Length: 160
Image 1 (cartoon, rainbow, N blue to C red):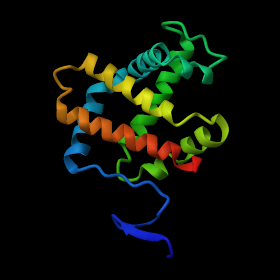
Image 2: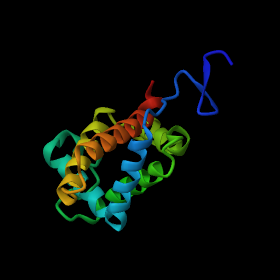
Image 3: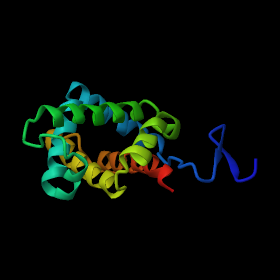
Image 4: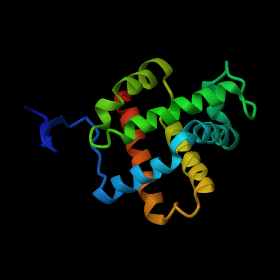
């Protein structure tokens, strides 16, 4: 196939983002996500609130939301974010396929500025560190940062 290469037993195109996570990264990500457990929606909402507070321009994508603290709409969207990341954690070796529909939604319908994924990722890392300081070691931080960066890359891959 022209413009293609084989990676991890699967043909990929040059445009398709690939994941560079070590076995240790994958282990750290899965262990951290296990700790999050049933708090995913809560942490997702908290990360969104942090994003809106620290980066007010991100609010422009939610003109129809009540963005006040504890808002049911922010909680519901935080759960969607957490559910999408849980899906991604379950498909660490094939994020492009796992997140394809979400990538389409953000690129073609919502047209979210790609920088906002980085801002939300940062706020999610802060949220996780504040709730699990003992487990948020430098290695776990690095692994989660690589994971969230890879998710962001996949979500913005269809913008090009």
